[in-house]
Image 1 (cartoon, rainbow, N blue to C red):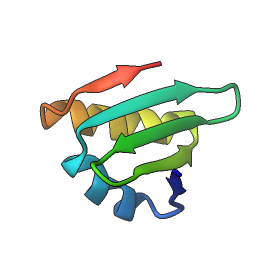
Image 2 (image 1 turned 180 degrees about the vertical axis):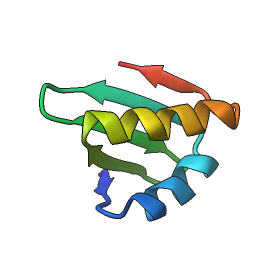
Image 3 (image 1 turned 135 degrees about the vertical axis):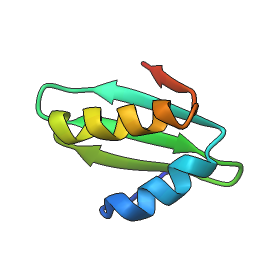
Length: 67
């Protein structure tokens, strides 16, 4: 069962430890999904903020997959 987070800083903590990051784009928002061994952590962000987070993850050599 996925867990939706509402604090970006908390999601970033999980995102840096994630096995994989998936990005799902919708017209109103972007959903980021961080898969860890126990849970899938998700967060919904505005498109401009999501692009910033994705760029930061890619800079840290974390694999980000667009779905």
